[in-house]
Length: 220
Image 1: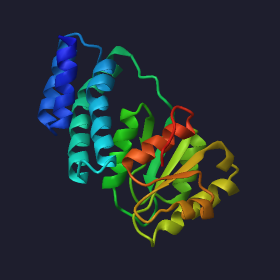
Image 2: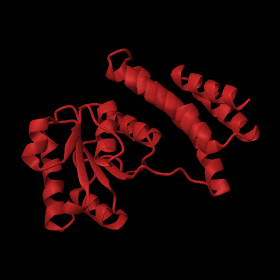
Image 3: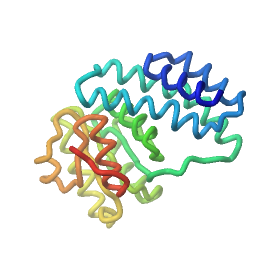
């Protein structure tokens, strides 16, 4: 029964079936399947497969978004059960992420957040239009391993530099790795502003984050 439910959970993600993922997650809980295993081996594994297909150019961005939404629908049910049982996933690391001040784009960031969670990260999403001082305050308070700064417009890229400079001034830069993301971001920009890496798309962002945590090797 367990293997069947895990496979069906994966199929729900691959078929972009939010209601199916939600229903199957409930069935997994009612059937005694470990909710952590259902999350990792059912939902998250399938989302990583779709992410890999997207990275190879075999899936569209709309498909990746739909798969992420299906996973989140099922994960909501499973996370409630995990919390109720007092169980927890062993996190790869803690990652703080947000879109910089002046930029309200969220779709790309939200996909990255979902895929990072699927990869085992504890992710704190600060949302969009996040002031530099908030990034600094949250780094000081939450002590993340990695900070992700998203900027989808060339006009807001300067805020990525501002956050890094502010972290340095606050004496926090050495304590956190910084990944930059967004359509205009390049490796040259990463080097210029003193970041650690960039995620050119959702898949590469996850690989880079894993590399920085010493859990995997990035190809990007």
